[in-house]
Amino acid sequence: MHRTRTRFAARVNRVAAGLERRGVVATYEAHDRLLANRGSRRRYARQTPGLDEAQRGVLERLRAEGYASLPFSELVPDRAVWEELEANAAAFVADTEAGLASERGGGESELRRRAGKEFLVRKYSWGVDLGLDDPWLRLGINPRLLDLANAYLQMWAKLEYVDVWYTPAAGEAERRSSQRWHRDFNDRHLLKAFIYLVDVDEQAGPFEYVPRSAPGGDLEQLWPWRPLGENYPPEDEFAERVDGRSVTFTAPKGTIIFCNTSGFHRGGFATGKPRVLATLTWDSPASLKALSERNYVFDGAGSDVLDDTQRYALT
Ligand SMILES: O=C(O)CCC(=O)C(=O)O
Image (cartoon, rainbow, N blue to C red; front, side, top):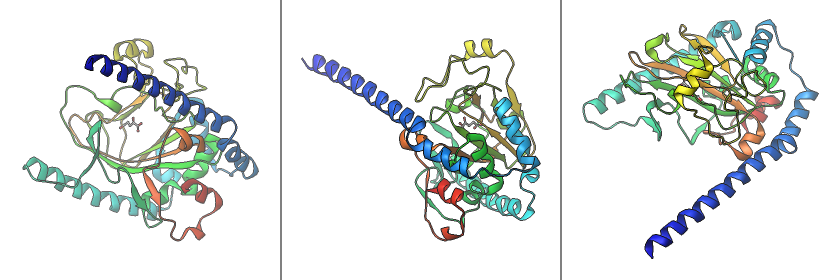
């Protein structure tokens, strides 16, 4: 009796989950085609940003390959911006290493981690209030990056995620979660930036990407992107079908990598050295309506200095 009820409850839950999933997908598609993204595309068309040569170079490579990388200083030549980020990152690294040392000694720490990706320590993780005094938030709406994001997405983008990650060298044998090849499920209109804050070699878990695997690329049919899709293919079959066509971003500190992570990517399998990077995600309003949630709340202070694209990105 109890067993029958349990099985029945499990079936009801499965049906409910299936219906909910279909509802989420339908909401996303409606917002992409008709509702939220239409307004955002219209705004972009009315006010298309002028890009300089460095930005145009990134945009062309993003459109052709789904990724582009370059020294941060080529995109943002203002030295003061980098120095402020570097100082902020150094404080995060010092706090993180103190916390990890305390944990190793059996003590407590206030380090932020998220379920499923415990191998990674995050500066913000989830649910933080951020204002314009935060250099990482300001980087996400810096016109050198935001104009590029808007031009790539062909709409006014939303800044969805801002964080700094410290991945300790774990010496694990097996890759887990985002260390394995996957597509991000949360938007087809997606741009991420990874800014390396240390030199990243093979032992520090470099980011890796399969060029032209994002929607629109000639490898898009490889376990195609779907909203909320089954996005982690079997590793063996994946290796066979990709057959060495991936790119590995071993690169010095101060490198910025842009990529559309609805294409296949993986990284952060730090075997011998810690990896420290900052990461930003821009996506479409449709994604925020149905598939994603910001990891921060913008406190709004001083927002009168922002232009319309910046305010749109943060709200
Ligand atoms: O840590 C990495 O290099 C990969 C991160 C990742 O998969 C993601 O941000 O979607």
